[in-house]
Each structure stands twice: as C-alpha cells, then as structure tokens.
Length: 428
Image (cartoon, helix red, strand yellow):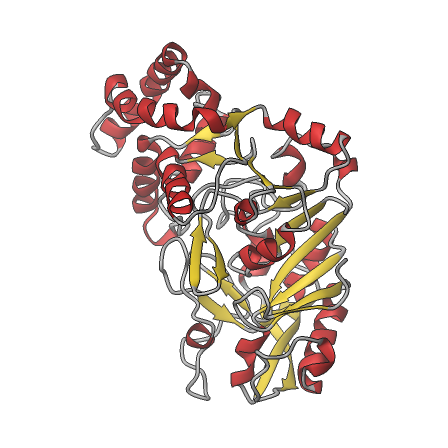
C-alpha cells in the first residue's frame, strides 16, 4: 500500500472524515498535518457519531498509529476531551502520538481571535474564534509555545513569560481585555501536560522510521484547498497550508515518499464564513427544497449553517492542479436525489473574460459570474446502491461530467453517511 495525501478540494466540510475513516484501515499510520480544533471531521460508526477536532481519523483502528503532526496547533483541553471520549467508549488511544513541535493554543489566542474579528466588523474573516490564527501568528513571530515546552516546567514558564510580554499589552491597551500571569496559565496547563506526556514524541523521526520499515502512511488534511493560506481565497482563509504540499512541511516526511493524492469533493459546494462564493444559492430554492436541509449542512465545530451552491467545476479544476490530484472521492451524491435538475458551473465570466480555473486576482474572483450547465436529476433513492452500475444513468452521467471538469478519476462515490454507503470504483 502506497502513502497517500487526503485533501479537501473546496472550502472544507466535503466529508473528509468519512473517507479517511473508510480507507484508514488499509494504512499503518494516519497523520493530521495542519490546522487545529477549528476543523471537524464527522465519522459515523453504527448508531454512534463522532465529531473529531484534534485526533486523526485513524484512531478508530487500534492497530493504526495516529499522529498529530508538527504543522498542527493543539488545544490541550480539547485533545484530552477527545481522548477521554474515546477511552470511555472502549476505543484505545494507546497508538496516538503528538508532535513535540506542534504549537500550543493558549487562552490569550482565543481572546485575541474574537477581538480581531470584532475589530474587523463587516470585513471579518468568519473564523471559529478557537485561537487558531493568533497561535499561527505567534509561531511565525517566533514567540509560540510548543508541545515539547509543556514537558519542562522551567522552560515553559520562561517562554511563556516572554510571550506575555508581547501579548499582554495587546490585550489591555488595544482591546481592553484582561491580561494573563504566568502562574495563572501554568496552573491550568501544566496538569494537562502531565496527562499528555506519554503521547508527545519526535513525530518526524517516527514517521520516517515507519517508511524505512515499509509501512504506509495516510496524510489527513483539515479544511480545504480554497482555505489554504497561500492558494485559497485570501484573505478569507485559514492560517495553515491545507493543500497537499502542506503534508510535507506539516509532517517532516519527504515529498518522494508520497505516491497518491486523493481529493475529496462534495457533489455540490458549501462554505462557512465570509468571502466570495460564485455558485452560492439563496437559502430557499424554487422547488421549496434547500441543499442546506437536504444535506444537513451545519458545521461540526460551530453548528453554523453552511452557505450552499451548485457544484463548481472551476474550483474542481483548480484544486486538481494545485494539489496534483490522482483520484477523487465524490461525497453526498445522494443529497442531489431531491432535485428535478442539477446544475454544474463549468466556467466563470469575469469582466468579459472567461475562466475555467480560479483566477488569481482577488477582484476577478469576487466578481465572477458562474456559467452553468443544467443536467437532469435522477429523483430516486440511491442510498442502497453498492456498485456504480446500480446508480441511475443520470447519476452516472453527473459523475462523468465532474471527471471531465476536474481531469481526475472519481474512485469513490458516497451515497450516504455510513461506511458501507460508499461505492469503490477503482481504489486499491
């Protein structure tokens, strides 16, 4: 089994958790390589639904090593809550590892996140206010605290003191918020550090040792391509490298060790937060049905209603290019069964120019007008289909059109939330 990067290709919420959980059993290790608890992966096992925010999806398989990589930011409290949730359900976390180089989300990061958003007013980014952006800011400013720092009381106190020298004036003088003391934070964080000590490791060394042993690794991305700090719809993006390239920097594994890139695409498109979205629909559709309600499009992390629109082939083409997609997993095809016809965006019109891939200039994308093709719907229940040939012809034609637009093969088709409600066309 070769090593694979699993990446979201839209604005997140494509169903990465389900696909990762589905294929993780075939890998020896699953690595989460970026992001923090601003992401949510939903996994349904029988009648139990798990919302994962920090722990990689491989945790469901006890023989699989699950690694939170150095490119992630970690909220120790959230991580311990997830560990306790799994242990209470009889799911072992003995094979969970956390990179000592992953940065720690501090309480002041969450304060600053909310304060920055409020300061931006109507131009806010739409963050989850979980402290992710300010934590990455401190990482780049070289005043961040890492998981390894938690393991030494003296080191943690010293680095925290220097960080607070910079952070406290912002809290007090700019935002009028309470300041923090070293003791105040240590009293909360150091007890958590003792519980997390057995999980913290040198993750890059671990992963490269596994590769030398012939083991296979699944690199699990959070968020998605259009939220990538470099390649997304800036400034309405997250603060980490969500594209396939982030798997290398976020794990410490060389590019030559990655063989395949599996892009997760929802059969329509959704977005949470601010920023342009060319195919966005009004909340109510002409048929009286909504993609929001049919797909139950509410955020795992925030509970916010997602913005919904028809499938965007321009974004699919762009995501395939910047990630180097080798395969696609198409999710939530069953949601479209409710509609008489379905639309696919095949191009944008921007100030008289036609685009078939996402324009780099922010203004062009913000003013993009979608060019649609309308395809016949299938108007029947497909949740019981277990092979591609069992799908109605209209559904198969829809999948074929997505392949043409993305220039990549659809290897999986998801027709429901459960593991078994997935058609494997070509993945081995």
